Image 1 (cartoon, one colour):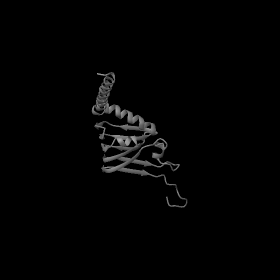
Image 2 (spheres, rainbow, N blue to C red; image 1 turned 135 degrees about the horizontal axis):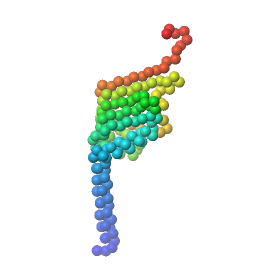
Image 3 (tube, rainbow, N blue to C red; image 1 turned 180 degrees about the horizontal axis):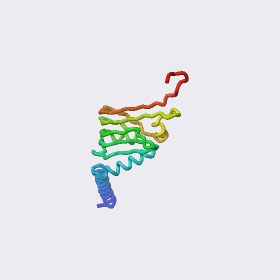
Image 4 (cartoon, one colour; image 1 turned 90 degrees about the vertical axis):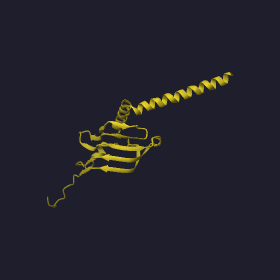
Length: 166
């Protein structure tokens, strides 16, 4: 066997071995509780960098490659006031969209969502204070969304009009 053939053979075996090891690592990463916990903490930290407040992501179940479910999700402002809270969230997606900096979510099911919007005295809303518009880069599209038993609250600080009845 010529040296060139030997180099090609060894390179091919090395490449196949690397692919098998990478697949095993990804399988362990998304297929075990430890791996999903690590993914949850990374996502939670990334979201916390874009949010002026606290983000909580509960236990992740499923494969996380094409779809998963989260048992709880919440966003609170810096004063610990609730903006969004949900029960179980289940969704499907295509991971290739992440490379294009977008997410197309399919078969989204949100159980018991609570959304609380509050307007401050200066006219701004709590979600404007929580989300830094420069740091939000994700474009998401939702297909087939089902919401079960939710609540939506919006409190506006209407300015008093002189002469209006109290």
